[in-house]
Length: 92
Image (cartoon, rainbow, N blue to C red; front, side, top):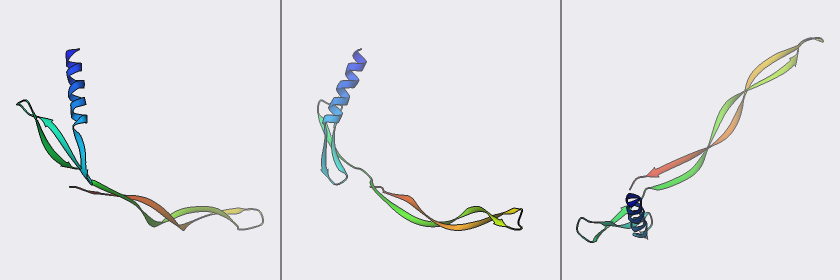
């Protein structure tokens, strides 16, 4: 029970000690061995998300009349345009 309360108090202290200073930058106050806190600036990575268009060949299955009685199966390919996501992470 005491350990749980200690962990909750430490978590509340840590979460309450964060302030945003700029784009992708936070200042975090951490406890020191002595009674007090030390302020550190942490830079988080930036993430750019976009899309890219690719063209692939997809299979097509159909039938073709060969005679009056039988439909002959035909296999071919067709070009299809597909949009794929892109993610670029820039480390600080």
